[in-house]
Image 1: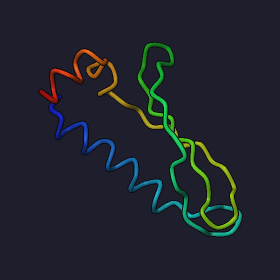
Image 2: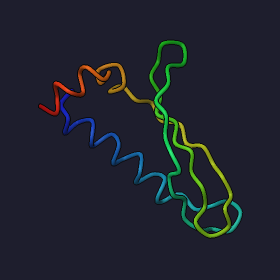
Image 3: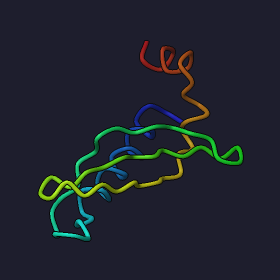
Image 4: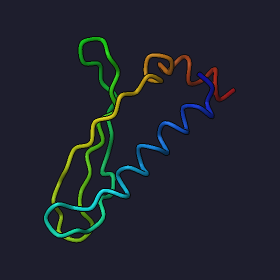
Length: 80
């Protein structure tokens, strides 16, 4: 997977987050932080978000096939 492909995955995650209204007030979510984890050897990108209007917190979970390929050593290779 190329760096451009990885960025498309991440951009699509942020699009989903941006277009999901808060279930409490209808406001917009912003990403506080994200973690990449393995669940049953399947990589996921877990995005911890907060509503910019009311502060309600929500976690978004996305399948992240790029995680296994982008271990720190591989990231340096892609960027160089």
